[in-house]
Image (cartoon, rainbow, N blue to C red):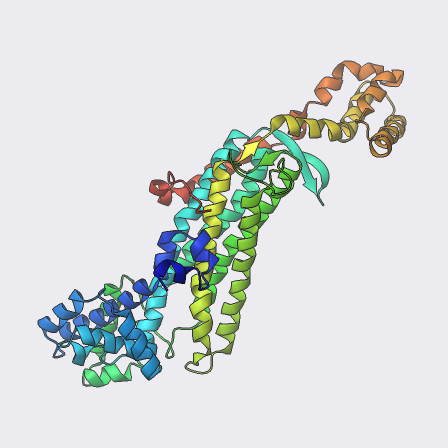
Length: 482
């Protein structure tokens, strides 16, 4: 069977074959994982040598020269033989580093490479997600600024409510993403290295290596932590770092899914109203049966992936809850799936969301038509106020408008006609004192309150400050694989 045929005879995750970026795929690849294991063994040996253990420069040079020359076939055979992934890779590394073989994994437990690598991948994964969230915020910010004062129907219970603006609604979406950005930043800043802790977190093996020199053990932990790019290590662990760390990170990552789902659901609803649409390419097909259709497939994809992302945090909750004492291995298989898939799904969600936001289309004339159908009812209180100013009795005016409103509503609902309430009011001589003011009363811009000013304030005070760290990343566009 050739390589191409084999590719299509084995299951491939759609997250990697269709949706996630190459960068995020590499972050959770076997090459990244096992080359990081080797780097960690190298860091450990380097720090041990610097603190007096009998490790030669030649051994370190041999390890450093073979950090990425991994014989995956040999590693696979070794794991089938010994049923232990870490020892399989110890043997595989030793095979290409015969001089360094005696000092590889010296004093360490499997979680030294396993857990520390996971923490590195979580850190690097967050570093990939953060600019993507920032770009989505930036795109929405530009959209909100452009449409800051374009009136549109607000909806509560998906029923027409008071007017808002297209830009103000976009700020609601942005507000959720700003929270996500801050949560991801917090999760990133809270990450600490596991470091060198031994089999139950007591550092007993390293204390033995350094002949009960506690200061050297502490310094070893500090130096390895620094070499791995972390500023701080956990003080207390079991054999593993607490799985609450995974939960903390995945909760923030899953929050991106919730925000994206809400945004894209709103876009889908507005697409049904023909007020707002996601980008639709010239040769894109909406339906195999109905050629006229323009389905919001990107937004639907985003919602679909977001639902999967949101479910994965439950795995992290369960895993954190069921760990026994210093550790149990029933976390391992679950985490091999849950950690990468959370980041791959979040990456796919953000790539898709950014692509949508870069091409979001607004149809002001459709929005204006929908406003004209509902605004007469919303304007009745303003009409009553104008009549009272001209000397009319408030209760009598209210009753007259109530009757005319019911008549107009009947025409709309029972006969499918347009809302003719204003024509009915204009034809009633009772309202003659304010007829010259009706156009002003019915101006939609008079019903949007402080929406434009709130958009400006939100962008100035809450969006611009959080984007300062990401300015160099904001120009990058999102390309979808499919």
